[in-house]
Length: 224
Image (cartoon, rainbow, N blue to C red; front, side, top):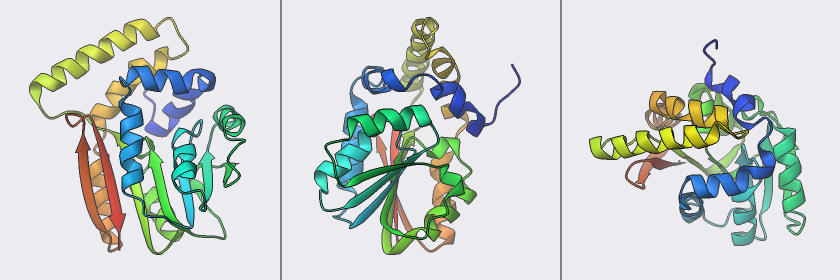
């Protein structure tokens, strides 16, 4: 198969997996997805408005809505299937709205106090996405990004690689087969933490990085 760009992998990873995403992301991360998203919440301080990029089925979006019930929250994603699941699962949250939109093509006539996302950095061009986020962030606002990272410790890397080999084997019989095969390559080749840190600092942001779960995941927080 011809080599795909990170962005081109999105429909291949998520084309027909919306209905199983919530359960798969939970068991595939040994429940750490919940922990990581809760850590994202600790970086956010009662904003009036929040933009959740690549919201998927709305797992993080609903967590935000529960913690900040007075905040207006907009979740965007490029997958109609995922947004359909998100809308169905979020009917009890009046402060959430969803919109079909590519994060790299943001062009709203409004700004937000907080822009956050879980798992988007590795798929986007840092220069493009950071510029779009800056244009849509209120003065004094905060950006919080989370994604996988390739562990630095040799032993942890061995375990990480073995686990993805297992996922690849199990996933070969499911709609997730392409994602489980290509995701480890994408994570290994991604240097998103340094790339986004650099781009955000060009706009004068103070950037902090929190490594999580044996350096298999990280949260980048940026604020003026």
